[in-house]
Image (cartoon, rainbow over all chains, first blue to last red; front, side):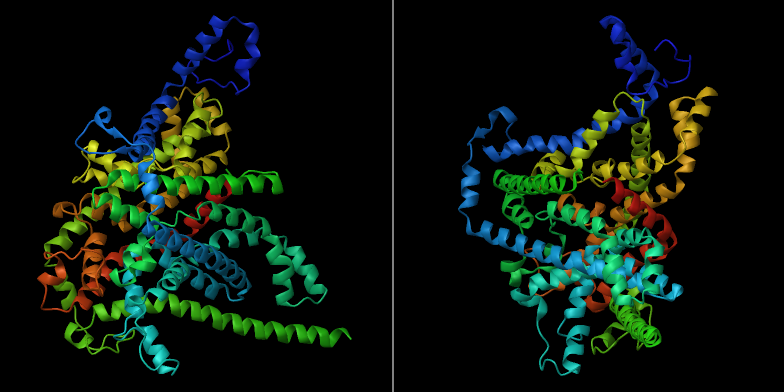
Length: 331
Length: 302
């Protein structure tokens, strides 16, 4: 510790403070503050943002207490009436809650299966393209929908599926697959598929980025060797490319399971309407409409807590399984 | 024996290549057609568009739809707010993420472990819609412009991406600067930031797109404050008001479609969609190599 150069911020490695355990406790304490003083700029550069994160990310967690009260916005914290699990009991006996849970799970599982598999195959096929200019063009274009807002995507999807000159209906009628245009946006049983398809359309290209990076990491000699052995392109994709990105696939799969229930509500809110409510109502929209907009803050908070707790349990379970299987953690 | 096998392989490969190119062209069409269709309708006479049948080329070319939408106050206000929040939100977000990332990249920083854990937790635990709403109410952020900027300033994901980039820089650069008597802030500002340009470009793109595309905060926190409307929210109102059934009492008598009976809602929708989309379209292709490497960095670390 005494070897610190004056003026220069400390160069000691993390293990250093333990090394002078022989020195007295007082000295150790002093050196802690001395180092802190030397690192004052580091503190100045991080502390304000730590406080910031505390206010905007940690303080809302305090709001979870609302779920156990009959929260009235006008009252102070100590004047609230505590009611225990009343709101949760009400929630678990509400049919609309189970409907919202069903819709959330249905759309998240569909999104996980389709939205996960499609980018893998898209990345592998992109990688097989011979013309470099064409390949780059397809890549650039495929990233485009990711950067567009859900408001725009919802507008585009509604337009494409419209019964009045929508491209999909015109195509299907033109090919004589259907006789009459289908009212996609007004029939509930289409809703889950529309949301899943819009999601794939929007994020397919973007989700290839990581796979393409993983594919570049595969040893080119493997392909050389297989070509000498006369392996076809299908065999190369199946036996070299796919196994080559296996680790990436499993890590990403586990991460998306952790986020299974947190599918957001943007698409459902923007693509949904009153005619398809039975299929479009997801947990967070339910919290928004039956909690916030009706002023039932406590009830809405109970929904949010249920959502958070389920996704945390999923995340820890999945991470635990992954740790056991691969001996490394993703968190 | 070997010759026909090789011949088969090449023929199979050729068939594969052709199928692949056809498939990828289909992907191109499916991705691009909707955008081109929207553009064509926005540039077509609105009365003529009602007849339908416009694909990717306008039938009766006109700029009138654009002239019309820019006469609407909400759109001008929304455009102004969207631009300000994008610029301010991006700059502040870059500053916070890069500063935090630098302090976390210093192996000797005392509070490093604490700060890093503290930030990572925010990625997994969120308070939820209503607690956040109540907090913003208590902080008097509802009905103000600040609600767009302040909550998003610290993002743990961005910090992780920048930090893994800084970790890849040679530490010797910092040490020699230290010997010259530079303090930690000077090292960050003069040495680290200029070297971080590629990763900062990536994060700037993420932040800017997030700000530009955000509509839910306008809807929830500033829904009844017309002076703080945003472009996306204006578009959302127009889209919702004319959709079948609407979506739960969001039809607003003051909205654009009502004010502009003279042109069809379809033309308004398409013209605003173009205005909202074009800025992104112009920017993202040039940043492609940055965000591709940024995504890869983020994925490796998180």
